[in-house]
Amino acid sequence: VQTCALPIYNSDDGGLRNHHTKRLKSYLSRSSGLSVQEIERRAERKVHALQYTTQWMALALIAKEVGLPMNDIIDVFQS
Picture (spheres, rainbow, N blue to C red):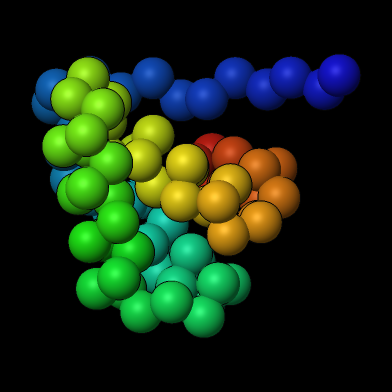
């Protein structure tokens, strides 16, 4: 099993986090054929339903649901 370290962000890097979140939404949209608005809707529903999850985790769950390889998602987080 190959492991990799995801970047750890603190509260001072909201701009970087927003940049990566936008990139991930765009990637999910292109790869899945869903609109960005549908990706956002699904993510909000997951955050609301799970309560303690982050938007990033919700987006990762959506990626898994639509059958995208998780290595690709991890690469988006790392770049």
